[in-house]
Image (tube, rainbow, N blue to C red):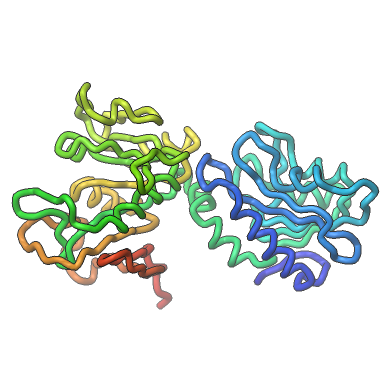
Length: 347
């Protein structure tokens, strides 16, 4: 835990962890970070709390201030992300905190946004004591997709595929329904609903005519629907099911992955979920554009040539792409392996 400031930062550990739990109530989609805030009085007692409920709604700090009992003074604000210092759909949180008479602000992670950063310095300039870095590791892990997107200028990319234990995504004749069972397929729908956009190649659209909606156990549409993005130069057929997707349809008519991701970021997309065939999946891997892998493994063997990935530029074992496994989950008879690119080893 790295901290900057004058107060004993350990005093705020419990409050920060509570603020982190509040942040989890906010939506993971929509472009804005999940942020939680608690307000402490001079005795360290929580007198108000809040969280951000999505783009265009009050930020966590303002939400908490709106619930503050009248006449409360000597306040400390404990917030998971550095308060913003700019005017967007809402005003700057730094100004709201100063106007409310907050005397100390404790935060976990600095805001990396080019427009919203700098809140700590603005608060200090207004005479507010600022302590940063409290439980920074926990909050960074929680906000990693959003932080990565803002720092890189492209969405956090999750690549998903389902395969047999021997790495095949389809049988020799191309048939693939269904490799995995119902529990695994339902988890995919939940992951779609936790994404801003779902990316697919024209080859998959032409071969499978997918709907790419996020559905519940009974087939009902879930509340949030990621909008489909079709990557490739060919047109989506006029009769394709994607034409009636409830979130609309984006056709890129391009294979320029960095350019496509940059454009999606500009449209507010922070989480992109890639459901692609081997060709497009391999292109994402080769370009180094995958932040997280979700690999569903079914206890079957298929053999044959239809592997889940094709050429990814690994000609020798020294060129291998190491991953760190972050989770293994049993879903019925299947396994879900979650992995991320491994950090380079120090020499």
